[in-house]
Image 1 (tube, rainbow, N blue to C red):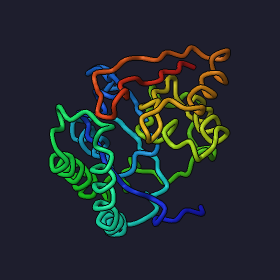
Image 2: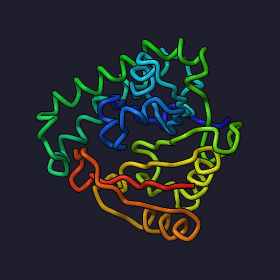
Image 3: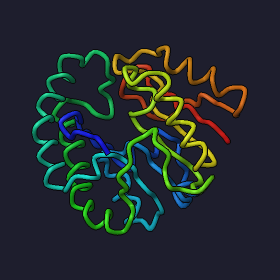
Image 4: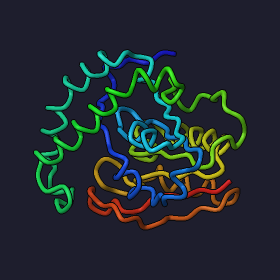
Length: 225
């Protein structure tokens, strides 16, 4: 697998955020979940502690926890500078300040790092680079999630996003993607192209969710197989 850790800017989100971003109910948290491009989120660690079943896939999981921690330390100042320079694109209500944001993210990533080696040994963290085909069976998972990965990075190209979502739809009964905006808090051509591609093959819904940090970023795309 050709993948360079230096190309990654790790940034972790929590179980509570995942619940809001994806509208996950207590019953859904008990299903067999797949989370794509999870990076150093604490979602897997926190849900696993609650006896949930979740598999996270990401190419950064080929690296040791110490290497991921080093990359987090290398990039977090850069991220905070970018957030500060673009603070007008965010809603500072639940997260009130840049310092609050940094504390929440660092705590989430610390929880991930503490859990990573154990979770990797248990098969909860799996090294995989999308949109390559996974080894999972058709509809093996109940719900597939993509947080701040698919639809967010337009520079990956429309074909990449479509192929990755097609693989998720092969192995998941349902796919949820959040947000549907790009890094500039704008709806863009990738989202429109993805919706146009899948709308005649699958049931698609744009669902308003109880989470909005990025201005206007309070919808997820839900796709049923």
